[in-house]
Amino acid sequence: MEGRLIAFVIWVIIGVLFIVMGIYDFNSKKAKPFGFWANAEVAPIEDVKGYNRALGILWCVYGVLFTLIGLPLLDGQNSGLIIIPILGAMLISIAAMVAYVVGIEPKYRKKK
Image (cartoon, rainbow, N blue to C red; front, top):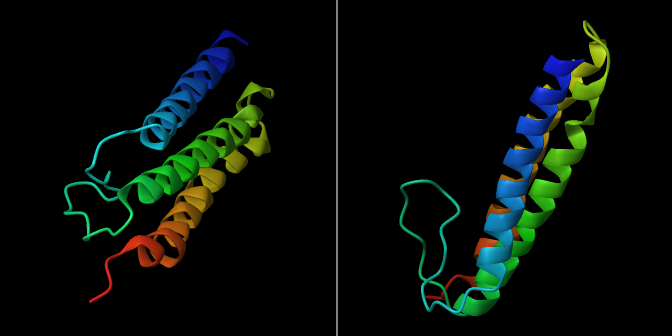
């Protein structure tokens, strides 16, 4: 039981970090857009505040979903439900990338 609880607590801490990052992005007063991709330049953005708010919402939703898919970690040892956090983390990560590339970036990118 103790090992499962430790794993779940670590999972929740990571999810909460995503939520905190989303809240920070959402409430940011900076005139610089936050990046989605690691070590990549952010495309020129027209409405920086709207872009940061949209990115903040994306990170908050991701953090909540990430935390929820970790619930099977509390199940018994050798449970087949462990596949839910593994596949779920991959699927919500892909969904976040799609939401950014298809929804957020084109909406706020400067038109040429």
